[in-house]
Length: 209
Image (cartoon, rainbow, N blue to C red; front, side, top):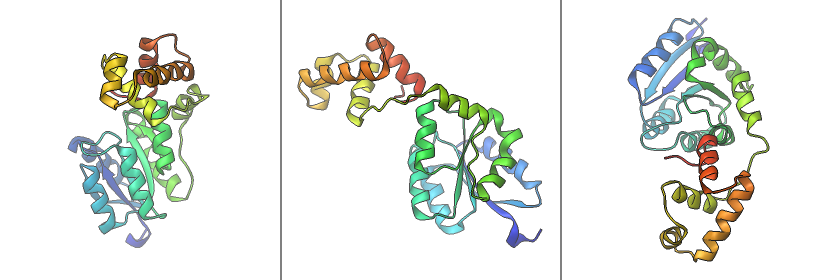
């Protein structure tokens, strides 16, 4: 296969060992070539503009920017690039966020050796690549609660131990409004109390500690 026909791939992960491993797996394939690597979202966005690879392999846990936001920015610059998430992040809300941002595939890092080459080829052909393990995780999260940005802010502060009065002060809200937000959060997450709401939110990826 000629160089012009090979699938060009860029790898984005802040761990050099991970990048080396992915590069090694791809480099033995005659129809693929790694054209660049980045360790941060900023590097990835800049490198994409120069290299315009066919496929980007993207981690979600980057040091400077959330991976889903990096995906959104890159996908917004070109409809020709296909992005496959390769990450250890498995909360259903974070999977949804990445797919909604523009990712065409989603792999957990423990699945990479078996699924990687299939995923690259599938997304390059315009298809999505969502393995059964990822699909099951998404299905378990249905129906998907719709928390507002403000409710997530409140829940994040609850998670670190703030009381309603403190949350109201931090967010410049009345305590009555904070109480209402927490009531809605409990209803949406089907939680019996604040502790259970935080546990559910952490498991599903609405908030992080």
